[in-house]
Image (cartoon, rainbow, N blue to C red; front, side):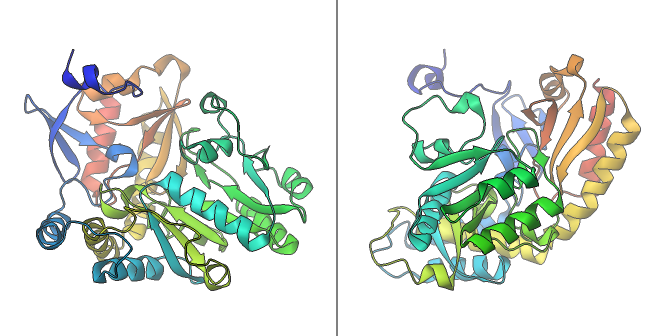
Length: 378
């Protein structure tokens, strides 16, 4: 057994290789074999592996001030917050910085309950919002809901069902929490009409609409923020994953009307918005903005869909948006992720799909290489 197997609590099923170096869209193992990474460390490697601008920003900041808490002002934290606000929804004027998507979601739920002075949180079947107890209380995937007790006031409703949404949202509802592309559930999404109905119903009842954009924000779906596909702006939005290219950060976007109800001491995160993480975030956001990754994500989505269609069986279709996609596979091909890894392609797994969450900086040549490996591995 390795030291990791001996000393780290075993809660993860491991992929069959150990990357020791990364550059751009590629990973190398100890034997020197190169792998094309279309998993991205679960949508985290937004600028690719070891992007030189991000690495330089981390080195510079770590050499000046590695960390200090929110107890003091910090200029780079302000730069990160400004960049996040500028890339987000127009109505969101401030951000709260944490360390993970689960924390960002819990911050949003707390803010929604305080703002509305209500308790009920509606969440949907198939959603995943993190692994802390409150986040699991709004998780719509049964296998993760094994920890009790659940947080009070949470209620599950079907995903994508407008009639169920109409029946559920009331003047007792504090928030409707939606994961617009349900990644863990197999890259499932809903219609534009569903998201517009969610916006209309929550506004009518004085409830908050929260979009969990832990994986969809900042260009991955072909828009800067996923609601921009449908002309829907949520009251609160959250993200994490690729915001700092791999350093831990969570973000909650907040409009002024909600921000002004939050008082000193209402919430906190010791490590949230640390200088080095924020330096990485600033560099990451500069790269994503300069390269307009939302435009390339939309273009490459079409290339992937067209390519998969030409491949045929065992690949049967594509779900999702932008570069957050699930390639549907026949039931007889469920061992494909392992065989693709042996062929030099890293992908994620999901119910009936290969999950694609590559760096947002990939090019057409990377898509073509990925499709070629799929074609040889059936």
